[in-house]
Image 1: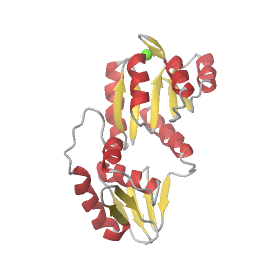
Image 2: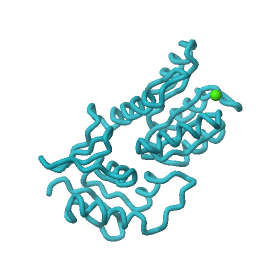
Image 3: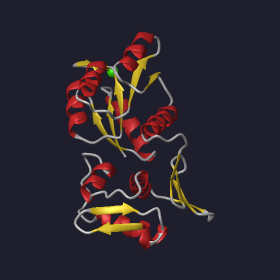
Image 4: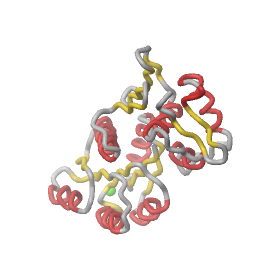
Length: 221
Ligand code: CA
């Protein structure tokens, strides 16, 4: 799941990005308001973490610009602890949640997963499709009443994408965009390779190939 992290503190941004990657996000970092505004319009993010104090402007203005142009990904803003006004203005400008600095990364991840869940109309951290149950916190898959299989990071991200919309055909390009950030250059056949691995786990007929179009998760088998 693609995530944009807007934070001008390079050290903080790099540390957060690696923690977020472990939690199943593929992260792009923007250090300025300008970069953030452009990336937000150009890429398909599932969520955004937005610091408000940026060297070339206020994160709130970036958020307002996105919302004006109907870019509606969930946004969590980072505010200074004492600044309640920022929190109120942020929520009014279209933020979905906020976190005051300094914060624990675990809380950031929990809140991010929560705003993504809400945007998908879910309450719990489980994604259910047919007899399959994907646990976001444990990055594991349960099939029927059988035992739990733990997944690698990429397996989890790919399955999460497919299972979030059963029956929807995802193109290879879209899947690559959701799985990898802008700095990664995955090879052309990486998706095929992971689909093969997942099929061994969920059964070949569960993930169908639509020739020339992409893949879909079949929750009816
Ligand atoms: Ca800052």
